[in-house]
Image 1 (cartoon, helix red, strand yellow):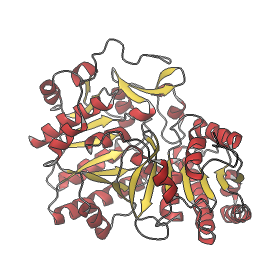
Image 2: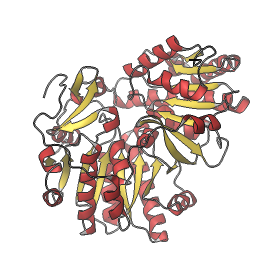
Image 3: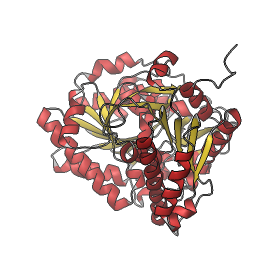
Length: 470
C-alpha cells in the first residue's frame, strides 16, 4: 500500500460486532490494567479513569482503591533519553507490583505510546518483561496495537496508516516518521519492530480476516509468542482482540501491551463516549478569568491549528524564543514571564514556542533541547498561574502537557473526566493541590483537524461577544 488510499481495507470482511458489555463481562476476574503512559495524551479516549503523575506507595494505593479496571501512571519517558527512560520504567513497574501485591491485586502492564510510532520501543517493553520475569511472572508475548481509531490511525495488512485529507498514508511516509528523536522508515509494523529492535524478533500478523472471523480461531492465534500484530480499523476490532487476549490470560498466558490510546479504552471495557456536555463544562470553567493555552508541539498540524485559532478569535500572543532558551534559559524565562503577565488583561493568552524547529547534532541532543524548552515553558506557566489563576489551561503537545501538569500546576492525582471533541482532547480534574478545580486540557500535537484547537477554545471560553446569537 503506497500513497494516500481512500479505502484502507478493500475486500475485508465486515467487523464482527463486539459490544463493550462483552468485554466488561470478562473483566471481573482479569488483571488490573496499569497504563504506563509516556506522555499524558493517552487519556484522550477514556472517561472517569484515575491518573497518577507520581508513583509513591500512597499514590498507588489511592489509584488501586478507586476500583475499576485500570488506571494511568504518567511516566513521561518520551521526554527522556534511553537510559533514564529504562530506569524510570523499571522504577514505576517495581512500585506498581509492590503496591498490587500488598493489595492482593495482580496487575497487567500497558506501555502506552504514540499512535504514530514515536517513543522508546522495544526498550520499555523489554524492561517491563525483565521486571515481571524477576517476580516469577514471565511474559509470553507483546501485543503491538498502535491504532488510534478516533484520530484515523489504523493498521491494515500489517501496515500502519495515518488519515489525511485525501485518505490514508503509510505512517513511514508521514511527517511523524521524520521525528528528530524517534524517526523511522518502516510502515509495515513487523518491519518497524525489526528496525527499532536491531535484531531478529519473531512477529505474528493477525489480518482482518482473522480478527473479524471466528472468535475461537482468533483466540488460538493469540497463543503465538514474540510480537503479535493485529489489524485494527474499528473499535469492534479492538474489542475482539481484547476478548481473545483476556481469554488467553485466563488460561495462564501473560502479555505486555504496546499500544495507542484506543486499545486502552477497549481493554477497560469502555465505549466511545460523547464529549463532556456544555452545561457541565460551563460549571467547571471560570469564564471571568483569562484562559491560558500552552503550546510546545512543533508538528505542522499544531501550527495550522494556531493559525486558525488566530483567524477565529482574538488573543494575546506570547512567544518563547527557542533559540533564546538554548542560549540563555534564565533570561528567556524572565523575559517571557514578564510579557505573559503583561497580557493578563486579555481574555485568552497563547503562550507558544517559536515555530522554527531547532534540532541538535543527534537524537539525544534534540531531545535535550526539547526538554529544556518544555522546562522553560513550565517555569513561565508556574509563575503566571501563581500570580493569577486562569479559567482553564490547555497544553498542546505531549512533553508540554506532561511538564505543565506536573511542574507548572503540581498535579499529582487526577481523574480523566472525558473529552472536549469526539475521541480526542481530554479534560483532567485534579483531586488535590494548587490545580484543584482548575480544568486542565491535554491536547496532543498530532490530533484533530485544522479547526480543532479553535473549536476547543470556543467550548471552554464561550463564543466571543456578538457570536452565538442565532
